[in-house]
Length: 314
Length: 280
Image 1: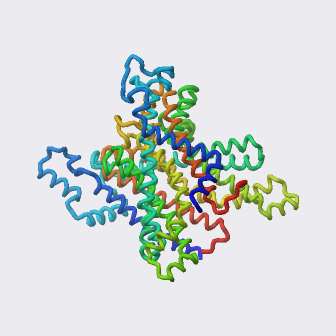
Image 2 (image 1 turned 120 degrees about the vertical axis):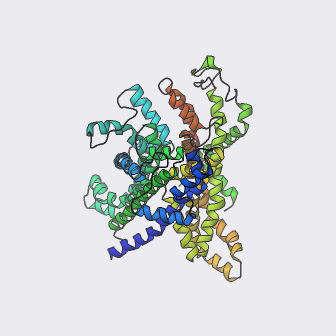
Image 3 (image 1 turned 90 degrees about the vertical axis):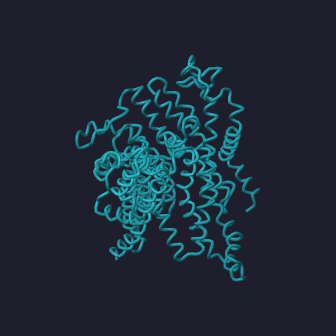
């Protein structure tokens, strides 16, 4: 039964991949000015232009180009950067690990801080803690990432001089340096997530704690803490799982900004550079990989949700 | 539900009311900025660079001696434009697609929804960057990109609502009595799916400002002679070692605008709720 559910989900995702690859691919069509002319300069001879077009496969009909590109992409060949000649797949995957470390750190902060804030504010029902939780969940979605990042840099790098404002060390190289370098970027990246998780979990917990079965549990001598952790949290977490899954795409997108500010050599920085240079093969590659990651995470979220919720029938 | 009823309820929501007033003032500032700004926004004064706030320069001056207060006022125009585009393009393109898709169902629906699900999976900021770079980097293309990015979400929202309304008795009754598709949509579907769409549109006022300032901050949106709060922050960022407070004013402008849009959205959601109670 579960296998059939999985299969159905997979079958649903496949046409989506076609749609998006087509969107990603057609972005080149929109680019004003011939990419070949961008590459060779305006004074290029017609002969040279034709030659390069043939070399890049740009002389073929657009659907043939798309089919060629897709066939190669499936095999992991995303072409070469039209500027540096570097393999796109190589550039993308070397930077992917950096971005993933950043995104995972940010998501971890968001989940831990968001859950803690929601649980504490519900548990203590204190006016101050609750006001604080609400402030965070309101402001967190109103402050753009780049602004929050700069405020953190001003506070922790310029004023207090505790943490570096730029740079990145991979966790494999030196865990200590990794945590020092990743702290500010990950925190800047997590603010939106903290806000959203706090808001959703807080209202879900409040609703669950009012349910009849919790009152029954109290009457059986269950403490507040037990009611919250053993009973309410399990049910309240369900909608939050979906929220966390959806957060991934936003966090990944925001790395574009955060990596630029903190000079982190990740996928986001690669994307901005490639877009500025109109390196279309690189743009296609980066966007494709980001998109596939979001699809995969959404897919996993669906599965996890189905596993957690006993009401869902496969 | 009449417009007056909703408006009266909205007035009862204090935060939403204040937010609405703020947004009205913002639009007025955007329209009148060239006349009310005390200085020309690009008027340099190298003798008075990076001055702290004073009687002459309420918010101080930037690294070229330009008056920050005047520049914040002028930046409102870009923010308002971004908000409008983030609402109007999805309303004019996304909502009709969603209604058609939900109402007609079948293959049309399948096709539209696959495309939309696919596009939604691309992170918004990446899609916006891609579109602006493809169209060419300038103010208008950034606005168009912002609008396109949020179109699929509105289509999905409108479709979901249409699916619910479509099976209501009054819609079926209208259909049975021979009403045409267009008439049913205009007379019965649109008025009944409007509430959640209006609420989402209000939140989009905020999101438009967030995306626009982010694009401009990255140098992929509004370009220099034009003013955006995002560009002001980016320029202030270069001076962060000397004068960190310069990010404060454009930063506060962004935050207040976004908060106003969000609070208005919350208020509208309450005011448009059919189960509305004064004490709720």
